[in-house]
Every structure is written in C-alpha cells, then in structure tokens.
Length: 251
Ligand SMILES: Nc1ncnc2c1ncn2[C@@H]1O[C@H](COP(=O)(O)OP(=O)(O)O)[C@@H](O)[C@H]1O
Ligand SMILES: [Mg+2]
Image (tube, rainbow, N blue to C red; front, side):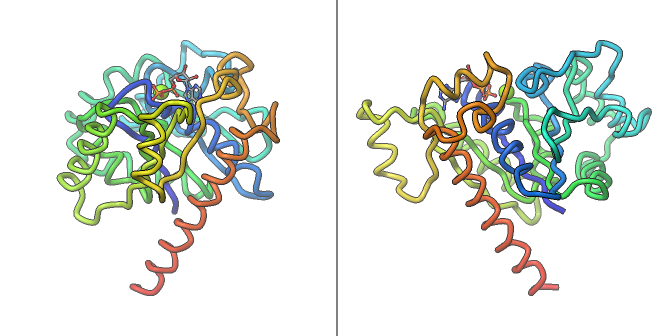
C-alpha cells in the first residue's frame, strides 16, 4: 500500500504541478495502476488533465460513505492513470471529517483504493487542519515542494511539526526544491545548502502544462523539466522500495 502525499501548508509552491507530473511518471511503468486523488476544492489536477468538471459529482460524499470511489473515479487520457477529481463540495470536507470523528477516515479510504491501485498520489490543499492531519496519518511518504524562499522554509517547519504532532509513526518527508532558477543567487544558495534535495527547474515548459493541460513528459519528453520529474520519481520509487524492505524486515 503506497500513498505519496504532495503537501505544503503554503499555496502556489508547485504541489499540483508536482502531483500531476509525478502521477504521469508513475503511470509510465507498464502494468502499474496509479490513482491521482485531488483533495483540493480548487480542482487543479482535473484541470491539468483536461477533465470536464462534472457539477453533479460530490467528492466529499466519498468520506461520508454515501458513494463508492469507483463512482467518482475518471480515466485520464493515459494508460494506467486514473483521477479522483476534486469539486467544490470539498470546501466543507474539514468540517465533515471533524463531525465524523474518524481520525483515520482518509487512511481507510486509501486502503480500500489499494485493492485497485499500486500507487496513490494525493494532491493536497494548503491547509493545517483535520484534513492535513489525516493526510499525514495516511501517507507512506510526504513530498514537500519548496520554492527557495524563507516563507516556504517556514512552511516546511510547519509540515515537520504537523507530522510530529499527528502521527505515532511519522512518514518520511522528502523536500523538493521547486521552481529553481539558477540565475538567482538565493536559489543557488538554497541548492548549495541542501545538496541532497531534488530540484525542479523553473521553466516555461512546466508553465505550459496548465496551458496544454498535459504533463510535461507528454509533450516535451526530452526537456530538462521532464527529465527532472522522471529523476525525482525514480528517487521516490527507490525510497518506497527501501521503506518496503524495512517494513518486511520489521514484520
Ligand atoms: N517548475 C516550475 N516552473 C515554472 N512554473 C511553475 C513550476 N512549478 C509550478 N509553476 C507554476 O506555479 C504556479 C503554482 O503552481 P501549482 O502547482 O498550482 O502550486 P500549488 O498547487 O502549490 O498551489 C502555477 O502557475 C504553475 O504553472
Ligand atoms: Mg494545488
């Protein structure tokens, strides 16, 4: 069971961009089934994959148990990749989770989805609330995109603290330097200070994802950005394999 959460308490840091491109990378492995689950009412992932917004859908009702996931899941245009899209009903998701009082509701739903999918990728909203706490409890690995700025470094500290507060066995965190421009001294300093952190370049090919409504690997497979996402996903897979080996040894 593998749940990769793309999370930060800060908006505009590249969560949806990472989630959509990494989901596409995951689906490149033949026979691998990947589900991208958008938990942000802004519905960025659905937009990025050019899904038609369906106003009748109520993504929140999955949490209440009123619908089954398969009634909400949509195929993408790419083999092996499905989406569980967001809609405006998720605005009230946090109050529903508090009302339900089930601290592991998201984890339980994720486990059910694991019967049909090998990789579950969560595109999270920029919140510090019950939903983010449930994300931490459900995640196998948490990816935190960090544009090089003191504000995102602060957001990273919030994530670390949030994970510590809400989980008994904290999932590992992988910080990713997002939107790196090597012409800027602050960005070079961030790279030099964190040599082990993966980095995604700030380039127009990535901005084009939202214009073309396709992951960068689908329209510019040899671009530096596509290669950076592919490298990052390989690193995530290696980390997941280590975690699986560790879990098997502990069992
Ligand atoms: N590596 C990048 N290069 C250029 N633009 C980027 C990059 N990553 C994200 N962006 C742009 O930054 C904006 C915010 O990204 P988004 O993924 O929506 O952030 P979040 O989901 O954290 O709010 C979008 O306009 C997106 O196209
Ligand atoms: Mg987003």
